[in-house]
Length: 87
Image 1 (cartoon, rainbow, N blue to C red):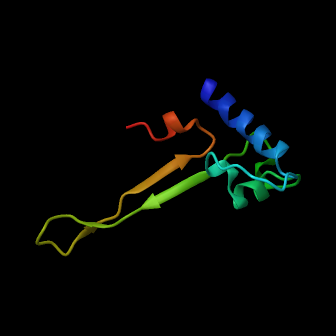
Image 2 (cartoon, rainbow, N blue to C red):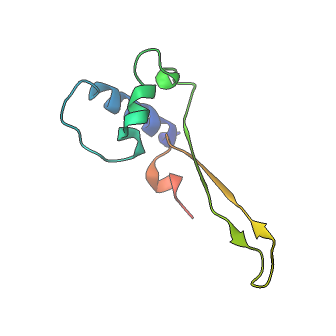
């Protein structure tokens, strides 16, 4: 539950800084696209919506193989970074 509160608190923190000309970068939530999405009328204005980060990279299944594996890592941005990237 505290991870969900983190996401809500972080959204509120970033929203409160939208009008400031100076910016500090702490996390992906401080990025330009995220800031656009939390503005009034944006997709992330609703507390029921969340954003995802997708990562993928291909690797050969075996050294002498033509087959590749492309794992997909999906991360919820609104979860605290210590949990978001926990192994």
